Amino acid sequence: MCAMSSVLVVEDDPAIRTSLIEVLTGHGLLVRSSPDGFGALREITRWLPDAVVLDLGLPDLDGAEALRMIRGLSQVPVLVATARDDDAEIIRLLNAGADDYLVKPFSGGQLIARLTAVLRRSAASGAGPGALGAPGGAPDPGHAPMVTGELRIDPLARTVHLGDREVGLTRREFDLLAFLARNAGRVISKRQLLAEVWRQPYVEEQTVDVHLSGLRRKLGERASRPRYLHTVRGVGVKLVSPS
Image 1 (tube, rainbow, N blue to C red):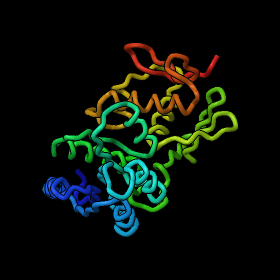
Image 2 (cartoon, rainbow, N blue to C red):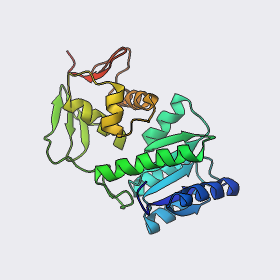
Image 3 (cartoon, rainbow, N blue to C red):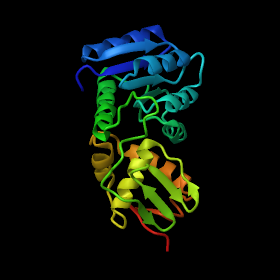
C-alpha cells in the first residue's frame, strides 16, 4: 500500500462505514467518508482522493449513476462494492467506469488487497488519480497508432476507432485492447493479461472474461462469431484482422 494514500469511503450504513474506515486507517491510509452520492461528488472535487470505495446502495443516487457522475469529474480509481456477482451487473459497473469490484460480504483483507491493486495500477499508469478531468490513463509516447483491419488504436490519444466510428471504452478495456494490438496475431493467456494489463497476479481470471465480453459487444461481435477477438480454447485470446 502506498504510504499516506487517501481514500474516500462512500457508504450509507453507519456501522459498515465505521468498520471500513477502521480497516483502512489501520493500514496507514488517510480516509474521509460520505453517506451519499452527492456528498461523494463534493469530496472528490474538493479533496482529490487517491481512490474511492463506492457502495452501490446509496440513498440519493443509483450506484451506477453515481459512478458515471464521478467519471465525469475525475479518473480517480473506483473500487465498487456490490451485493450482486452476476455477469450483467459486473459488466454494467465496469462499463460505467469501475476499476475493480468486491462482492459483499467481503473481508478487510480482501478490501486492502483490491485497493492496493488499483492504487498500484494507477501509480504505474502515471496518471494523477484525483486530478479533475485527467485522461483515462497515461499516454504511451513510444507507440504510433496501431491498425488492424478497420480497427485503429491510438495510444497517445487513448482513442479507438472502428472505421469512422469512435468506440467508447473504459480505461481497462482500452489497456486490454492496446496490449492485444501490440501483440496482434499472438495468443495471449489470461494469466499473462492479468500480469501485463492488471499487473496483479491475484486478480481472478473472470475479470478478463468480463472485460473481453464488454470489448466484444462494443466492437459489434460475439464470442461465438468473432471478428477481431478470437478465443483459443484452453490457451488464451488473440487479436487478428478479419479475413
